Length: 233
Ligand code: SAH
Ligand code: DHB
Ligand code: MG
Image 1: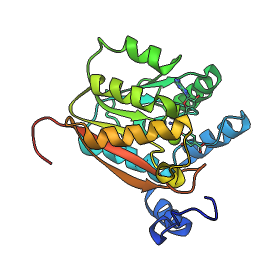
Image 2: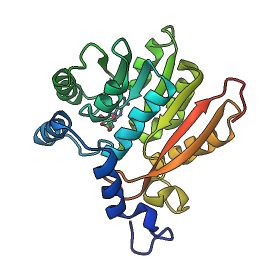
Image 3: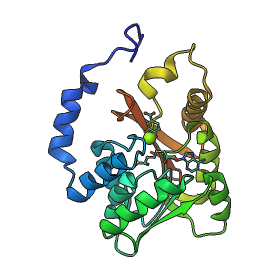
Image 4: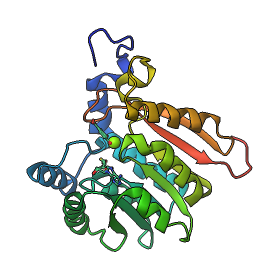
């Protein structure tokens, strides 16, 4: 965060409190730690979700009873392992990744996690892979975490592919407060503002943003939205 940022940290976003939460509730096992080490060794960007966000994703899967999940942006498979472990044994996670190298690293770790039967990585631009999913059974949950300028397009696809009552979750929707700085006009931030506005305004959705700490940006947020199925919130 810039020193002159108009959005100073509040105590709830303090790093030591985040570490406290992670230590208590989001302990990582050797598979997850080795996955991150392998990703670093292979030179992949270190932008996997935090352990605490991984735990939240797993809880959302279990609370909602999700059995079919779609992830957009696999990277090294870190969030995929949290999501995949939370699925029932006959559940399915399809994860979309544009970089063949990322997909290869992820597949190795998914295998090592014992999740190869449940987690499938599909390589290619997500918008192409999404178009091919149009005729498949609906998803119970989508996790959006790929290129930020495409977030509004990913939301359109999520609304087509997720069943009523299902969840649409998106990482990095606050970006260190950049969403609130009118002078920041890059395509990614503009698209994230559009994404957040649309979740707020779309009559098909009920949503909220939770504060997170991401690895690359101190303060960030995760958007959690539910596709309405008739029952009021
Ligand atoms: N969800 C991961 C992190 C994803 S990082 C985790 O938390 O563990 C974002 C990923 O999206 C990168 O691996 C990047 O290569 C991928 N990506 C970027 N643009 C993409 C696109 N158009 N289609 C599919 N994947 C894309
Ligand atoms: C960054 C972090 C992310 O979680 C992501 O999905 C993409 C980029 C970053 O810090 O640059
Ligand atoms: Mg992210």
